[in-house]
Image 1: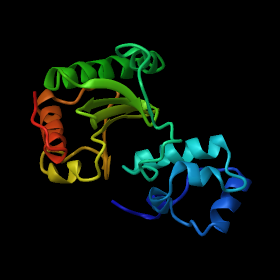
Image 2: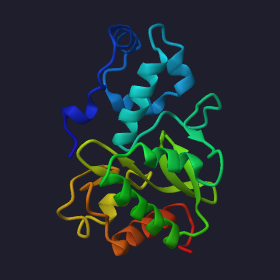
Image 3: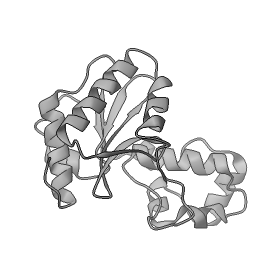
Image 4: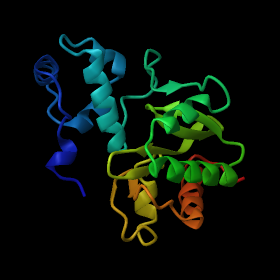
Length: 197
């Protein structure tokens, strides 16, 4: 599934492209070794470029180097899921209803999960570890396991779905089957040393 498009940077302004080139970054995956704070130090790297790069990394199951206290990649919800509600209000139907169904399913499977916004998308954390999430795009929805190895472990069950290394795409009008979501979460929980609730 890896190809040149997966390695390419998203559309960026000329100053940001020059900054990345001057620093020796030629592929998006190289930025997973860089903290967001360090990237912001590059002359020409503005907030919109950082946001575009963060979102491009997320789509490929990557992120900036963790542990950067200046990073804003995890934001606490204002209330118990207020920001997730706000995110969903911005999604057009039928995608909104489909994602609301997925949200309920995730919370039924891991009822102790904390709802947060992580990398600007709804996510679910258990014991401080992000174990699931979702995102809406123009022509599809995505289930995000927040790991680059969950989907490959369930290749047989995912036959027929489009996906990247860590993003399972599904139609805007058809929720993922509960049994599949349960398997996805079970694999992720095993990775972080937790048991399903």
